[in-house]
Image (cartoon, rainbow, N blue to C red; front, side, top):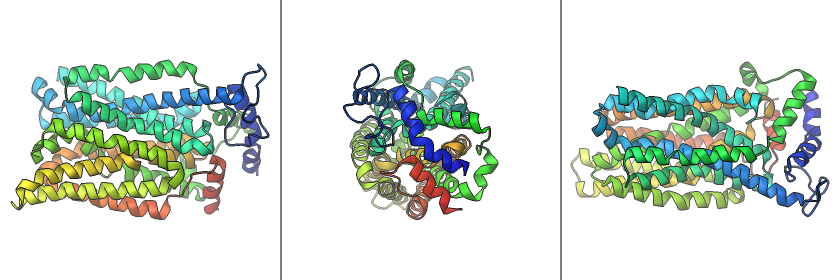
Length: 443
C-alpha cells in the first residue's frame, strides 16, 4: 500500500524537484506542470533551460561512454607494440587485456550502493595497474550513466538520448581503431585521457536526478527499504532480475571482448592487414550507431536487439567458417576475405543494438527501490562474463579458432531466443508504468 501511494505521488514530487533543477519535461503531464513556453520564477523559459540541461547531462554520460570505448579497444591496437617493447608473453598479455574487466567488477560491486548513497614486470605491472584503475572507473560509469539519463529524460526521447550516449562507447572504440592505426601505443594512451577530462568538467554543470531525490526523501520518511540483495529473489522482483541478468549475459558472452581486445590477433592469423581491418571496422560501426539512435524510439528496443543478436550470430559463424576452410585446406584464397566479412558483420551488428540497448533496458526496468542492489548484480554479472571471455580467448583461440567462434555463434543464438521470449518492450512508457507491469506479473 505504501509503495502504491509513493508511485501515485511521484508525478507531483517530480514536478517540484524538476522545477527546482530546471528540468521541466520529465515523465508527467506538462500541461499541468509548466509546458512549452512557460516561465519559471525568474522569468526564464523553462523548456529552453530544460533542453540545455538535458544536453549537458547527455554530453556528460557520452564522455563516460566514449572513454569506456577507448579503453575497451585499446588492448587490441596496442598488443603488438606492447609485446615487442616490454617482451610480454601471451599469458602476461592476457592478464593485461583482461585485467580491465577485473577492475570493472570491483567498480560494479560498489556502483549500485555508491550511486544510491552519493547520487549517480615493472612496465607490465604499471600497465596492469593503470588498466585496472580504468576498469574500476568504467565499471562505475557504465551503470551510473544509463541510470542517470533514464531517470531525467522524457519518455518520448528517452531512447534517442540514451542511445546517443551509450553509442559513444562504440564511437570511442572506432576512434581508437582509427587513431591507433597511426600512432604508438603510448601516444594512444595519452590521447585517451581527453574525454575523461571533458567528463570531469561537465560534472560541475549537471543536476542531481529528481527521482533519486524523491527516493531519498521517501526513505527518510518511511525509514525502510527493499534495496537488499536477498529481496531481489522475492517473487515480486524475480522476473526483473532474470531479464536484467540475462541481458548482461547475452551482451558479453557472445565473444565481444575477444573481438574487441584481440582483434589484431584475429586479423593477423587470418592473413588480413590489421591497419586495413581496424579502419574498416571503424567505418562500418559509425552508420550502425546512427541508425540505432534514429530507430530505437520508432521500432522499439526488442526489435533492434533481436536484429543485432542475429547479425552477431552470422558474423561469428562466418569468422569460424573462414578458419574451418583453413583447417581443411579448401578454398584458402577466400578464407581471409570471409574472416574480414565476419568481423565486419559482427562489429556492425553489435553497434546496431547490442552495444547500447541492454544497458538502456536494464536502466528502465529496475525499480528505484531496488536499483542499487539489482544494478550492482547486473553490472557484476556483465563484467564477470566479460572477464571470462577476455581471459580465456587466447587459450581457446590456440585450441581451435573454428570452435571458438562457433561457440560464440551459439551464444548469440541463445541471445536471440532469450530476447524474443523474456525481454519486454519499453518504448513510449514511463518508468513507473514499466515497473508496475513487471512487478505485477509475479504477484
